[in-house]
Length: 340
Image (cartoon, rainbow, N blue to C red; front, side, top):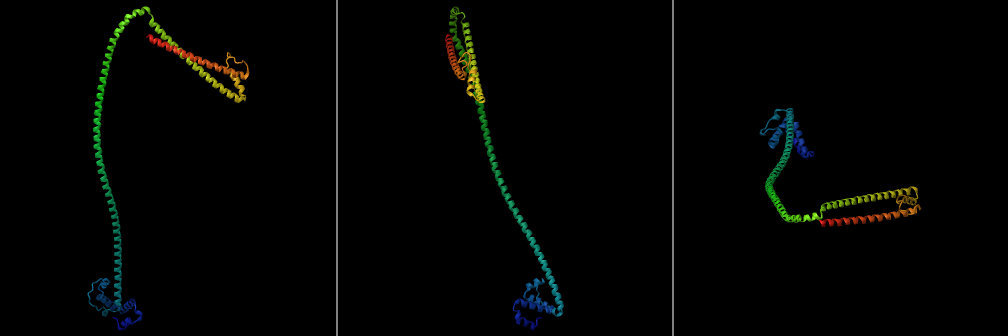
């Protein structure tokens, strides 16, 4: 296929020092030769590089030489090469599609595996939570059992305490009945003793009664009259004290009112001294306590001071009288008790 000139050009040309250029020149030479060059190239591949030959052609190398170059011309070789190239391109496209499908399938599988891992993690977490819930349930069931036992023990204690309480109430009731019985017995005994002790006294009084009735026939009536007198005196004292209190209250109120009027009159007229003198003369000085007649503001003030002193003396005298009456009542009450 390769002539001597082509071989000399390949090995001696200074421009074909690089291997890639040598390969390109060799391919150009094979393309010029046609089918013979293609067959020679495939045969050389089959002999030297069987794996590459199987990858390109898809056939196993049989290491048999063909005489394609001799039988067919250059046109047949180019046609054969083009068909093989298109076939190889289709195979490459199919391989790429398969690879893409495989990659997509791998991606889907990875996504599914990730989802499965997430599900496994969630399932693991849920199983852990379920285990915790079971442990918590067991613990709570144990606590419930303990509380139930404690409740039963408390109920037993409550029943025992209620029984003791009922027994104590019954005992208390029995004791109260016994106390009442003893009280009645003591009262009956005291009555009997009183009767026994009072009989000789009644007999002695019955013996002394005729003398008392002879000398003092109306002793009881006198005592009753004395009691009535004391009651009437007490009532009179109470009435007097009430009247005195009312009078004092009325006097205090009248004084307060007069003071207010004086203040108001002094503020309105502008002559407080004259207003105070007139009001004191007109209000505080009675007709029978003459303190100077019509002596103006100063005389009226002096008369008012004398009235206040006389009222104070009267109050002291009334207090002394009430104390004396109370002492007399007490002494009479003591005499009445001694007579009884």
